[in-house]
Amino acid sequence: MAQKFLENGYEICELEENPNVVVVNTCTVTNIADRKSRQVLRKVKEENPQSIIVAVGCYVQVAKETVENMKEIDLCLGNVEKKDIVKKVEEYMKKNQKENIEMQNKETTNEEKINEEQSNNNQTTNEEKNTEQQETEPDYNVVLGNYIDVNETVYATTNVNIRAFDNASCDKKGLLQSDKSITRTGIGNNGWSRVIFNGEVTYVASNYLTTEKPPEKIPVKVPIKNRNIDPLKPMVALTFDDGPNGTATPKILDILEKYNVVATFFDLGTCMENYPNITKREEQIGCEVGSHTYSHQNLNKLSGEEIQDDISNASRIYEKTLGHTLYLVRPPYGNANVTVRRTLKYPLIGWDVDSLDWKTRDKKKILEEVNKISNFDGRIILMHSIYNSTAEAVEELVPQLLSKGYQLVTVSEMAKYKEKTLQTSTVYYNFR
Ligand code: ZN
Image 1: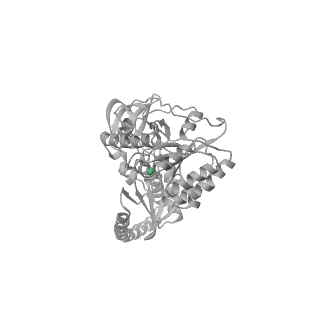
Image 2 (image 1 turned 120 degrees about the horizontal axis):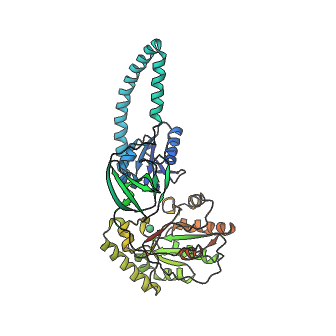
Image 3 (image 1 turned 180 degrees about the vertical axis):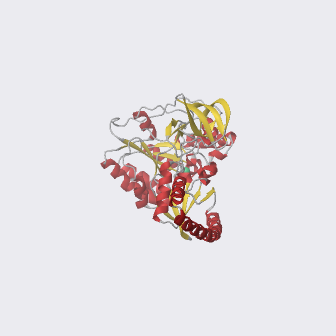
């Protein structure tokens, strides 16, 4: 797939088989249906009116009804494999061709009618035009669903927007933070919940609410080395997942050592077993080591018991390798539903800058992606310690960041100097 990266966090690919097909991967966006996302999609369509916009990925999977109803999306597929995308698009195009021919026939007759009417009455045609215009810009400031009354406390499963009405294109009223509670007064038939926010009737997408109480949070004491860090100066945390391996990880460590800077490595149990000395070296040069679980499974798909098994293995190998207990975890893919958070009694570290190094595997593209951000202070950058292209990018990125005045710190250092106490069962994306 040829790849293009557009604004607003969109990952948009054009299929090699047909460059008019634009695939939007909704796993990389938090909401495809908000106003800004719709603008991005409209721009794609404006630039190439022939394009067929296909939505795939996690968000489509959870909010199929909303995405299907978006007029910016031509085809809504959910979690599908690439070969199936091509097949489904072909089916869609065939069906569309047929419909187009039928439509063209109809349009001709309508035009003929309008011409007739025009000669009789101009006003009718204008009125018709007005109705048409209204249809292209629908009113987002109305309640669309039918609601069953309830009165219960619900909790957000992730950071989620509170809206004035029950659609993602209307105004935001606020943000309900992960694990925070709110009173729900209605459950809609359209995937939205009616909630009370600051005494006002508002709406939140039901997918992100649960009646299950969030896990208890306990402050965690993290070991901090004595380094010369100025809390008033900007700082950024480089993080490296999926390693260690025998080639790229040592290169990255050489670069960090050369510039006398540190990073955080989220190592896999299986890789630590294979390269214990590299994990040890990470810590020896002042970096921080956390766990990226034992075997890199999507924890959202596992039971509490299975998650516990995996993390027990991971922490056993971690202790054996480094001689101290595990205190920091990054779940694979950043996936941490309520069961994951309840089971993993560690601070869970996400990221807010994704270098996409695993996808592009290209030094220039990695640097371009990271440098889309102008202010790195308090941010966590996601990279992977297993690609040579990542090592090449780090060789340029580190001096770049230093010359811009950033201190390169570990995740725990950043939490400390940004005065945030890390807690168990909590996901951190940055410390801004
Ligand atoms: Zn990973």
